[in-house]
Length: 448
Image (tube, helix red, strand yellow):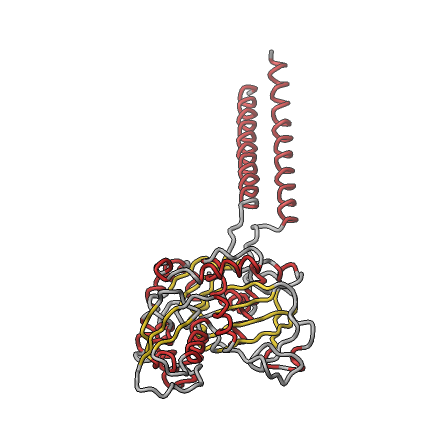
């Protein structure tokens, strides 16, 4: 009988030890699993946007991304990829409008491969056409509409969330360029002083800056208001259509060919440069108001003289500084308040100055280098990304809903509470194990 009781006691003791051991192991596994899941690094979720810059000389596709949870209602946007569309700008397809959309397909396929498939349907897709299309619309509204329809047909067939293709105003182009310059210099987030923006394109040029006076009182069309990262900005911005580098050249050539001479000695081109140009290539532009000279010839010889000082005088003549109906003007009777702060110049301003290695240094040294460069023979010269789209995307993120960020499985308080109870359970199991082991050890000692 005593042996049976001893056997039963041992069996009960072994069962208790097994149960306590299993519970202990389970508690330890639960503790480790909870700690691992709770402290697992959270994946940053991103949203994406695509903006097509349909400029006068070419079209470029820009892909942007920003954290899904926004900062003061504005996404911290960064450009991740750009694709330059083959061929000229979409305005050049006015003769064959249907080909404008087809030209975009290669870059759009590239975008599809770069943006995660799960984000395709929610990725906004925009196209903004600038001065080239503004000029085409001035010439022929019907043709500009046909070009846009061709573009829309291709973009609507993409897997992205197509938001529209439109010709943006010059003021919008200038204002979005200002946003880009100040975003890249991190002035918007800090809420500190801002930088003015100068943008030189092929068919227009823009100036934008924060003015110290109320622009809307004197010229409402040049006043723009932005709210970015919790701050309000009141801008002066103006776009000078026809004063981009390509159209300005036509304005200068139109002035120099009014005499009807068979050749034009142009100080803005290098010595040795000589090209036959048709009058149509100059006077067909809607920017050129002067009439073609009354000559029977269809072309003239464009000859370079290479004189920077005389070139400045030629360029100066395409501006009108003489009259102003406002308190202050820049040129061509356009209101402009006093300039404020430093300025950042981009697009063609940058390309030219970077080519000449003049992005830093004094104004005087730049003038000297320009004099030397312009006088070099043409035989020694031949052969030789900031823009408005980032600002456009930044402004548009204000209208794109933010996503809630990924969160740990448990709130911090819940995590601490769970750890406390699991630790308490382990302590209790150790206590029970000790209670079961101690009598068993005593009984063995007594038997000895």
